[in-house]
Structure formats: structure tokens, C-alpha cells
Length: 276
View 1 (cartoon, helix red, strand yellow):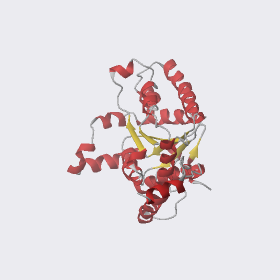
View 2: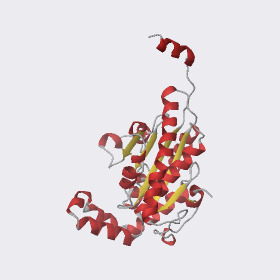
View 3: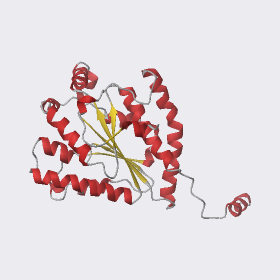
View 4: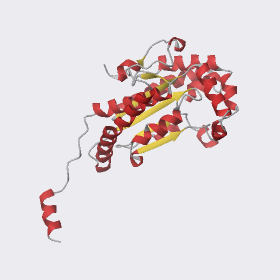
């Protein structure tokens, strides 16, 4: 059974029923996962280069987008560092969506997202995404209820459009518990080298934990038509990194990527080169 099928979730769910320290699809321990992650690197890099080559030569239109969502400290940045670090940077586009600017607020919430979509041959990673507009937008009441409702439908239509155009969408919800988060926030406050990662505003959002859990559950239930959500247990950072890398690799394998055929006569070019 693929890891994707093991981690896929749909319909109404209760996030509190999922173990954040579970390790579906992996029987080893922390040290084993680190080695396994490293072992994925060569194949992932090879398939990414094929994807990139097809896009650069115009021989393929496929593009891949990884959407990372989760509560603060769930590990979105860690995945960008450890998983994306296995790939060639020239074939990656990484976007971290922050609070919308005034200019962005003058447009529909998906306007800035469309501008950040990966080109053919690229792997895009969204560190937070358009889902913030139905998460913090809902919890913080930044938009009226009818607008939030409209956004669920808009997201489904947007994701369907992306996949219909040759895009592959990998959506990952990085699941941690409130205790996991407390432990990680405390670790940041105990380590001067981690102070820069701490934001007092994280505690303000933490006070709204239950509201966010409800908002995530609704988003997972309402927005899975074009691409399923993967609930990635993220209480163990080592498993989280291995799992997301494996999900990405499974998607690349499924594309059955081939190297682009040359648009020139190879033998003729060899002769020309030999004569120089």
C-alpha cells in the first residue's frame, strides 16, 4: 500500500482522534528514518531533473505543487529545509504566504496565489497557502461567513483547474497536538539560537487552538475534490520529513517521467564536434 493511500483523509474528521506520534508506513526508529530520508535523495533528484528537463525543452507541461499547512511549530519550515534540500534548487519555487498587502487585498484572495504557481517542469512548495483564507479568515472572523463559504467553492474550482492543466497537487496537513506545540515553543525559549523563530503572536493564536482545529477539519472535509489531503503525523519531526519526501517521490514515480528526446541529429552533432 502506498504511503499516499495510508495518509489520505476525506470527509468529516475529528483531528483529536489522530495520533501525532504515529508512524504509518515506517517501522523503524528516528535514526533509521534519517538514513531512509537520505536514501530517497538520489531517486528524487533524478526524477526531479527529468521533470525539469521536460519543462525546459517544452516536451512536457507537468508541474507539481506541494501545499504545507499546519499549526505553528508543525514543521513547514523544516520540510522546506530537509525535504526540498534533497532536490536541485533550480527546479524549485518556494513561496511563503504572509499577511496580504494592501495591493493584494484589492484583488480576490486567489490572485496572489495564481502568480506564485510553479511553471511546467517545476516543483512548487507553498509554506502556508490559500487555505489561510478559510483558516485564520474563519477563526479571526476576517471575512463574513458568506465570503468564507464562497472561498471553499473557489478553492475547489481553483484546484480542479490546476490539476486539469497538468498540475499535480500534494496537500499535506502536518498534524501536531497542543502538547507537541507547547513543547516546541518552550524549546525555542530555552535556546538562544532559536529565539529568532519565536513569535509572541504564536501564543495569541494558541489561545484559539480549538477554533483552528475545527477550521482545519472543515477545510479538509470541504476541499478534497480535485486532490486529497494527506494527514501527516508530525509529532516526530523525523517521521514527518520522511513521510513528506516519500509522498513527493510517489507522485514523481507515478508520472513515469522520461528524458526528453533531442530535437537534433545526435550522430551528426557528434561528427561535427569530432571535426572541430
